[in-house]
Each structure stands twice: as structure tokens, then as C-alpha cells.
Amino acid sequence: MKTLREAKIGETVKVKKLHGEGAVKRRIMDMGITKGIEVYVRKVAPLGDPVEVNVRGYELSLRKADAEMIEVE
Image (cartoon, rainbow, N blue to C red; front, side):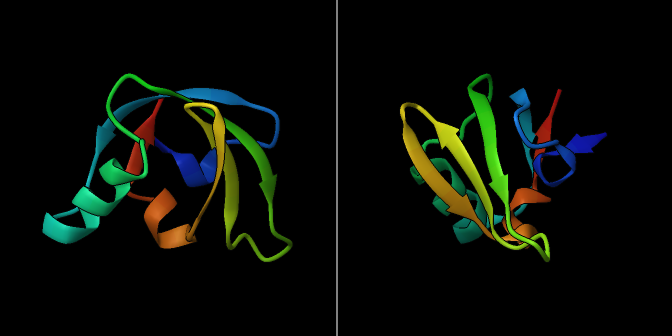
């Protein structure tokens, strides 16, 4: 299982599954990250937190913990 946190800079990945429960999962989905959507990894901060991605035409910064809940291929 590969997560969004493990994706390399410049890589485009496809979301397979969202892990997490309740409000956390809902918040990730509200940001536009849903199953089947493509996510482009733009930048990763020096300590790995946050991860900047491009999704549905806009830039989004995700915490490391949130990026680990997003399974990609």
C-alpha cells in the first residue's frame, strides 16, 4: 500500500482509497480528494510536513498525518 505521503515530488498519482473515520475523512473529501482523482505532488517541506499538491486545478497543502490516510497508485 502506497500513501500520498510516500509519493515523490513531480509525481502524479491516482487516489485509490481514503482511510480514516468521520470528520477527518469528510474534511479530506471536502478538499476535493476523492477516489479516482489524480493528484500532482508539487512540493514537500524540508521536514516532510506539509505536502503541497495540485488537485482539481488548485493548490492544496496537506499535513503529513492527512497525507498518510490517502492510499494512491
